[in-house]
Picture 1: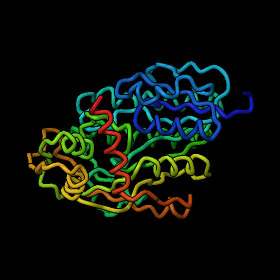
Picture 2: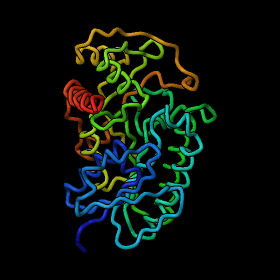
Picture 3: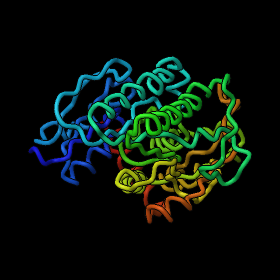
Length: 318
Protein backbone atom coordinates (compact mmCIF):
# COMPACT_ATOMS: atom_id res chain seq x y z
CA UNK A 1 0.00 0.00 0.00
CA UNK A 2 3.06 2.28 -0.10
CA UNK A 3 1.96 3.95 -3.35
CA UNK A 4 -1.58 4.63 -2.18
CA UNK A 5 -2.24 8.30 -1.34
CA UNK A 6 -3.09 8.89 2.33
CA UNK A 7 -5.73 11.48 3.18
CA UNK A 8 -6.59 12.71 6.67
CA UNK A 9 -10.08 14.16 7.14
CA UNK A 10 -10.55 16.07 10.37
CA UNK A 11 -14.19 16.14 11.39
CA UNK A 12 -14.60 13.15 9.09
CA UNK A 13 -17.54 11.72 11.03
CA UNK A 14 -19.64 14.78 10.31
CA UNK A 15 -22.15 15.23 7.51
CA UNK A 16 -19.69 16.59 4.96
CA UNK A 17 -16.66 14.68 6.22
CA UNK A 18 -18.40 11.32 5.85
CA UNK A 19 -19.32 12.03 2.22
CA UNK A 20 -15.72 13.07 1.56
CA UNK A 21 -14.56 9.78 3.10
CA UNK A 22 -16.74 7.89 0.62
CA UNK A 23 -15.34 9.87 -2.31
CA UNK A 24 -11.68 9.57 -1.41
CA UNK A 25 -11.98 5.84 -0.79
CA UNK A 26 -13.65 5.56 -4.21
CA UNK A 27 -10.69 7.46 -5.69
CA UNK A 28 -8.31 4.84 -4.28
CA UNK A 29 -6.96 6.75 -1.27
CA UNK A 30 -6.35 5.45 2.21
CA UNK A 31 -8.66 7.58 4.38
CA UNK A 32 -7.98 8.40 8.02
CA UNK A 33 -10.85 10.09 9.82
CA UNK A 34 -10.01 12.10 12.91
CA UNK A 35 -12.98 13.15 15.03
CA UNK A 36 -13.82 13.66 18.70
CA UNK A 37 -17.55 13.22 17.99
CA UNK A 38 -18.48 16.59 19.45
CA UNK A 39 -20.98 17.03 16.60
CA UNK A 40 -20.06 14.10 14.34
CA UNK A 41 -21.66 10.66 14.48
CA UNK A 42 -20.30 7.13 14.27
CA UNK A 43 -23.39 6.22 12.24
CA UNK A 44 -22.11 8.40 9.38
CA UNK A 45 -19.00 6.26 8.94
CA UNK A 46 -20.25 2.92 10.26
CA UNK A 47 -20.35 1.47 6.74
CA UNK A 48 -16.63 2.26 6.35
CA UNK A 49 -15.21 0.80 9.55
CA UNK A 50 -14.34 -2.56 7.97
CA UNK A 51 -12.92 -1.08 4.77
CA UNK A 52 -9.25 -2.10 4.36
CA UNK A 53 -8.21 1.46 3.46
CA UNK A 54 -10.13 3.22 6.23
CA UNK A 55 -8.95 4.14 9.70
CA UNK A 56 -10.68 6.01 12.53
CA UNK A 57 -8.74 8.01 15.11
CA UNK A 58 -10.76 9.48 17.97
CA UNK A 59 -8.92 12.66 18.82
CA UNK A 60 -9.51 16.32 19.64
CA UNK A 61 -7.66 18.26 16.97
CA UNK A 62 -7.12 21.21 19.32
CA UNK A 63 -4.50 18.98 20.97
CA UNK A 64 -1.18 17.95 19.42
CA UNK A 65 -1.59 15.50 16.53
CA UNK A 66 0.68 12.46 16.45
CA UNK A 67 0.44 10.95 12.97
CA UNK A 68 3.11 8.38 12.09
CA UNK A 69 3.89 7.47 8.51
CA UNK A 70 3.02 8.95 5.16
CA UNK A 71 0.44 11.71 4.69
CA UNK A 72 -0.39 13.34 1.36
CA UNK A 73 -3.57 15.36 1.92
CA UNK A 74 -5.38 16.94 4.87
CA UNK A 75 -9.01 18.03 4.60
CA UNK A 76 -9.65 20.21 7.63
CA UNK A 77 -13.39 19.94 8.25
CA UNK A 78 -13.46 19.85 12.05
CA UNK A 79 -15.83 22.48 13.45
CA UNK A 80 -19.37 22.91 14.67
CA UNK A 81 -21.23 24.34 11.67
CA UNK A 82 -24.81 24.82 12.81
CA UNK A 83 -25.73 28.01 14.70
CA UNK A 84 -27.49 25.81 17.25
CA UNK A 85 -24.12 24.14 17.92
CA UNK A 86 -21.74 27.06 17.92
CA UNK A 87 -24.05 29.22 20.03
CA UNK A 88 -23.95 26.46 22.66
CA UNK A 89 -20.22 25.75 22.21
CA UNK A 90 -18.65 29.13 21.44
CA UNK A 91 -15.24 28.46 22.96
CA UNK A 92 -14.88 25.02 21.36
CA UNK A 93 -15.81 26.59 18.03
CA UNK A 94 -13.13 29.24 18.38
CA UNK A 95 -10.52 26.71 19.49
CA UNK A 96 -11.05 24.23 16.65
CA UNK A 97 -10.58 26.91 13.99
CA UNK A 98 -7.57 28.46 15.74
CA UNK A 99 -5.66 25.79 17.69
CA UNK A 100 -7.05 23.02 15.48
CA UNK A 101 -6.08 24.78 12.27
CA UNK A 102 -2.64 25.53 13.71
CA UNK A 103 -2.13 21.85 14.54
CA UNK A 104 -3.38 20.72 11.13
CA UNK A 105 -1.06 23.15 9.36
CA UNK A 106 1.88 22.07 11.54
CA UNK A 107 1.18 18.49 10.52
CA UNK A 108 0.97 19.49 6.85
CA UNK A 109 4.32 21.25 7.14
CA UNK A 110 5.98 18.30 8.86
CA UNK A 111 4.63 15.75 6.35
CA UNK A 112 4.81 17.81 3.17
CA UNK A 113 1.04 17.34 2.79
CA UNK A 114 -1.42 19.53 0.91
CA UNK A 115 -4.11 21.02 3.18
CA UNK A 116 -7.60 22.10 2.17
CA UNK A 117 -9.38 24.35 4.67
CA UNK A 118 -13.14 24.11 4.93
CA UNK A 119 -14.15 27.75 5.23
CA UNK A 120 -17.63 29.14 4.83
CA UNK A 121 -19.86 31.74 3.26
CA UNK A 122 -20.24 33.08 6.80
CA UNK A 123 -16.92 34.92 6.35
CA UNK A 124 -19.03 37.38 4.33
CA UNK A 125 -21.31 38.01 7.33
CA UNK A 126 -24.54 39.85 6.57
CA UNK A 127 -23.29 40.93 3.16
CA UNK A 128 -23.52 44.36 1.60
CA UNK A 129 -22.41 42.88 -1.74
CA UNK A 130 -24.71 40.60 -3.71
CA UNK A 131 -23.92 38.03 -4.97
CA UNK A 132 -20.80 37.47 -2.91
CA UNK A 133 -17.46 37.27 -4.73
CA UNK A 134 -14.28 35.95 -3.13
CA UNK A 135 -12.81 39.45 -3.31
CA UNK A 136 -15.49 40.77 -0.90
CA UNK A 137 -14.09 41.28 2.62
CA UNK A 138 -17.42 40.83 4.37
CA UNK A 139 -19.65 42.53 6.92
CA UNK A 140 -19.13 40.60 10.16
CA UNK A 141 -19.94 41.61 13.73
CA UNK A 142 -16.85 40.34 15.62
CA UNK A 143 -18.50 40.56 19.05
CA UNK A 144 -21.93 39.25 18.11
CA UNK A 145 -23.10 35.75 18.97
CA UNK A 146 -22.31 34.47 15.48
CA UNK A 147 -18.84 36.00 15.59
CA UNK A 148 -17.47 32.90 17.30
CA UNK A 149 -17.97 31.01 14.03
CA UNK A 150 -17.58 33.79 11.46
CA UNK A 151 -14.38 35.22 12.93
CA UNK A 152 -12.97 31.77 13.71
CA UNK A 153 -13.19 30.87 10.03
CA UNK A 154 -11.75 34.24 8.97
CA UNK A 155 -8.84 33.65 11.34
CA UNK A 156 -8.37 30.13 9.97
CA UNK A 157 -8.13 31.52 6.43
CA UNK A 158 -5.51 34.04 7.59
CA UNK A 159 -3.47 31.31 9.26
CA UNK A 160 -3.64 29.09 6.18
CA UNK A 161 -2.34 31.91 3.99
CA UNK A 162 0.40 32.69 6.54
CA UNK A 163 1.65 29.07 6.46
CA UNK A 164 1.50 29.09 2.68
CA UNK A 165 3.44 32.34 2.34
CA UNK A 166 5.90 31.76 5.18
CA UNK A 167 6.56 28.02 5.02
CA UNK A 168 5.50 27.16 1.48
CA UNK A 169 2.79 24.73 2.63
CA UNK A 170 0.51 23.70 -0.24
CA UNK A 171 -2.89 25.02 0.79
CA UNK A 172 -6.39 25.39 -0.64
CA UNK A 173 -9.36 27.31 0.79
CA UNK A 174 -12.98 26.56 -0.02
CA UNK A 175 -15.84 28.83 1.05
CA UNK A 176 -18.82 26.51 1.33
CA UNK A 177 -22.37 27.78 0.88
CA UNK A 178 -25.45 26.06 2.31
CA UNK A 179 -25.22 22.33 1.62
CA UNK A 180 -27.78 19.61 2.25
CA UNK A 181 -28.24 15.90 1.67
CA UNK A 182 -28.43 12.49 3.34
CA UNK A 183 -26.75 12.18 6.77
CA UNK A 184 -27.58 15.71 7.85
CA UNK A 185 -28.29 15.60 11.57
CA UNK A 186 -31.98 15.34 12.39
CA UNK A 187 -31.45 17.87 15.18
CA UNK A 188 -29.12 20.09 13.15
CA UNK A 189 -31.16 23.17 14.05
CA UNK A 190 -30.95 24.85 10.64
CA UNK A 191 -33.99 25.60 8.53
CA UNK A 192 -33.82 22.84 5.92
CA UNK A 193 -33.49 19.83 8.28
CA UNK A 194 -35.99 21.41 10.69
CA UNK A 195 -38.53 21.80 7.88
CA UNK A 196 -37.99 18.22 6.75
CA UNK A 197 -38.35 16.72 10.20
CA UNK A 198 -41.46 18.75 10.96
CA UNK A 199 -43.02 18.01 7.58
CA UNK A 200 -42.40 14.26 7.79
CA UNK A 201 -43.83 14.12 11.31
CA UNK A 202 -46.87 16.16 10.27
CA UNK A 203 -45.98 19.05 12.55
CA UNK A 204 -46.36 22.71 11.67
CA UNK A 205 -43.26 24.04 9.90
CA UNK A 206 -41.66 26.86 11.87
CA UNK A 207 -39.96 29.80 10.17
CA UNK A 208 -37.96 32.18 12.32
CA UNK A 209 -38.37 35.72 11.03
CA UNK A 210 -40.64 36.57 8.13
CA UNK A 211 -39.12 34.04 5.72
CA UNK A 212 -37.84 36.67 3.31
CA UNK A 213 -34.18 35.90 4.10
CA UNK A 214 -32.53 34.08 1.20
CA UNK A 215 -30.10 31.20 0.87
CA UNK A 216 -28.56 29.19 -1.96
CA UNK A 217 -28.71 25.43 -1.43
CA UNK A 218 -26.40 22.87 -3.05
CA UNK A 219 -26.66 19.09 -2.87
CA UNK A 220 -23.78 17.39 -1.08
CA UNK A 221 -22.54 15.46 -4.14
CA UNK A 222 -22.04 18.75 -6.01
CA UNK A 223 -19.97 20.09 -3.13
CA UNK A 224 -17.83 16.95 -2.97
CA UNK A 225 -17.13 17.21 -6.71
CA UNK A 226 -16.04 20.82 -6.24
CA UNK A 227 -13.82 19.99 -3.27
CA UNK A 228 -12.06 17.23 -5.20
CA UNK A 229 -11.42 19.54 -8.15
CA UNK A 230 -10.15 22.33 -5.90
CA UNK A 231 -7.82 20.07 -3.92
CA UNK A 232 -6.30 18.70 -7.11
CA UNK A 233 -5.96 22.15 -8.70
CA UNK A 234 -3.16 24.71 -8.34
CA UNK A 235 -5.47 27.43 -6.95
CA UNK A 236 -4.31 28.89 -3.63
CA UNK A 237 -6.79 31.73 -3.12
CA UNK A 238 -10.32 31.10 -1.75
CA UNK A 239 -12.97 29.64 -4.04
CA UNK A 240 -16.74 29.75 -3.48
CA UNK A 241 -18.47 26.39 -3.90
CA UNK A 242 -22.24 26.77 -3.82
CA UNK A 243 -25.35 26.70 -5.95
CA UNK A 244 -26.01 30.23 -7.28
CA UNK A 245 -29.78 29.64 -7.44
CA UNK A 246 -31.12 31.84 -4.61
CA UNK A 247 -34.48 31.24 -2.90
CA UNK A 248 -36.24 32.59 0.15
CA UNK A 249 -36.59 30.52 3.29
CA UNK A 250 -40.39 30.78 2.89
CA UNK A 251 -40.12 29.32 -0.62
CA UNK A 252 -37.96 26.47 0.66
CA UNK A 253 -40.45 25.67 3.41
CA UNK A 254 -43.28 25.59 0.86
CA UNK A 255 -41.32 23.22 -1.41
CA UNK A 256 -40.54 20.83 1.43
CA UNK A 257 -44.12 20.94 2.68
CA UNK A 258 -45.38 20.02 -0.78
CA UNK A 259 -42.85 17.18 -1.12
CA UNK A 260 -43.81 15.64 2.21
CA UNK A 261 -47.47 15.51 1.17
CA UNK A 262 -48.61 16.31 4.70
CA UNK A 263 -51.21 18.88 5.72
CA UNK A 264 -48.88 20.86 7.92
CA UNK A 265 -49.04 24.63 7.92
CA UNK A 266 -46.27 27.22 8.08
CA UNK A 267 -46.00 29.25 11.27
CA UNK A 268 -43.76 32.21 12.03
CA UNK A 269 -41.75 32.92 15.18
CA UNK A 270 -39.41 35.77 16.10
CA UNK A 271 -35.70 35.19 15.52
CA UNK A 272 -34.22 33.47 18.60
CA UNK A 273 -31.66 35.20 20.80
CA UNK A 274 -28.26 35.17 19.12
CA UNK A 275 -29.65 35.42 15.60
CA UNK A 276 -29.65 39.21 15.39
CA UNK A 277 -26.85 39.06 12.79
CA UNK A 278 -28.51 36.32 10.74
CA UNK A 279 -27.65 37.12 7.09
CA UNK A 280 -30.60 38.51 5.15
CA UNK A 281 -29.23 37.40 1.77
CA UNK A 282 -26.83 34.72 0.62
CA UNK A 283 -25.82 33.89 -2.95
CA UNK A 284 -22.42 32.82 -4.24
CA UNK A 285 -20.72 34.26 -7.26
CA UNK A 286 -19.28 31.02 -8.68
CA UNK A 287 -17.34 32.53 -11.58
CA UNK A 288 -13.99 31.40 -10.16
CA UNK A 289 -15.21 27.84 -9.61
CA UNK A 290 -16.48 27.69 -13.18
CA UNK A 291 -13.44 29.21 -14.83
CA UNK A 292 -10.66 27.75 -12.65
CA UNK A 293 -12.10 24.32 -11.88
CA UNK A 294 -14.67 23.72 -14.61
CA UNK A 295 -17.19 23.12 -11.81
CA UNK A 296 -20.92 23.77 -11.83
CA UNK A 297 -23.68 22.25 -9.68
CA UNK A 298 -25.59 19.48 -11.41
CA UNK A 299 -28.29 18.31 -8.99
CA UNK A 300 -31.68 19.98 -9.33
CA UNK A 301 -32.90 21.23 -5.95
CA UNK A 302 -36.17 19.26 -5.98
CA UNK A 303 -34.33 16.04 -6.85
CA UNK A 304 -31.90 16.68 -4.02
CA UNK A 305 -34.70 17.46 -1.57
CA UNK A 306 -36.47 14.21 -2.47
CA UNK A 307 -33.31 12.17 -1.83
CA UNK A 308 -32.76 13.94 1.47
CA UNK A 309 -36.37 13.45 2.54
CA UNK A 310 -36.08 9.72 1.82
CA UNK A 311 -33.02 9.54 4.06
CA UNK A 312 -34.75 11.52 6.84
CA UNK A 313 -37.83 9.28 6.69
CA UNK A 314 -35.76 6.11 7.13
CA UNK A 315 -33.90 7.52 10.13
CA UNK A 316 -36.97 9.00 11.78
CA UNK A 317 -38.65 5.59 11.61
CA UNK A 318 -35.75 3.85 13.35
